Image (cartoon, rainbow, N blue to C red):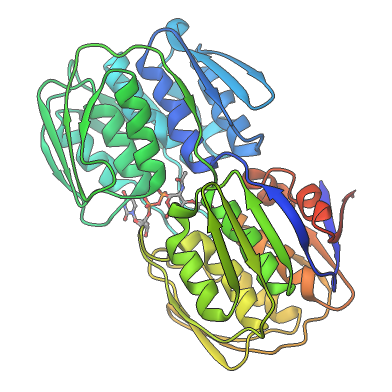
Length: 417
Ligand code: EPU
């Protein structure tokens, strides 16, 4: 397995292009199961999680071709409705095939994804919604098995806002008979991107991007071409890297409108922000000030940016407080950041960070994607060398992170162990 080595102390400067969004590409690739012809997607990031969903689609008999950032998925050869444990265990988001498989094949058998490092992550809301749409659901031998001759529209209320839950039910409802209303639906840009693709396939969807989505079922959907939206979390991570290193970095190919909460907090911390259509410049020309952050569903501050901001706060003046409200165990980076010299105290869902730490490099590792990204950021400002092990997690969600940071002047490289 590889490791990433960072030598701290360089100021980041220059331009970096943001890749397509992992969490938009995953449901959109899965949505191809609803059609029986070639769907062509551009700006698909080259990531381990994308390889996993492609492998999963291929295991269902789907034909997938990849040429650089373009992926063509043709589900006319779909022959299986079973997502096996061997593939699902690599990536929880595999559950996204449950809704479309059931809608297209009247049957789906998908291995239960189980928890992960950041929390228990149940899928009860996905299953409750499918049951309300008329599916018969059985849980046996670690698999969820769903059956329905044809799903029937229903009103579904989410007790908790769930991103992939909303996406799964959207993909099931588009081919159901009648009207489905999703209440307390997720409003994330990735949900809107999926709804846009489904609409282009011929689905009737209103209200995506609001808490109430109405779907009127249709009999058939047709193949589409679509471009994947920019990754707002990758963008946010580079924005933090710029502010942290007192740098001057311009992000291109990004969507400033999706980054409102992140931009607002960075500006509060003292970073200079300039926005133009498709680009954001971050200037770290003033001393950083402490912040209080509470993670929330979109358009609130994203849980996927919490670990990266924690690193920023270790360098800011005074005391900062982070409250993590989405996942119960998403402070796994704290113990590793403390090994680098950070002063952080966690109590329940709250972390108190005392700033102006002088971080010093050390070997570290994390078992979560965003936690691993935070360790790379810490390495950029730690004195000496930081080695990030288990790069596997970074490769799930950041396209060529070391190459992009090198291009901005960081001293960072990948080594084979
Ligand atoms: N929840 C339930 N029951 C459910 C579903 C969710 O109780 O049936 C709870 C979860 O346990 C959690 C909360 O609802 O406490 C929100 O979870 P959500 O379902 O929204 O998370 P997700 O859909 O599994 C997606 C992203 C995550 C991101 C979260 C929150 C994808 C593929 N994953 O996960 O991304 O953190 O939304 O925004 O879209 C990442 O990219 O690193 C990542 C973890």
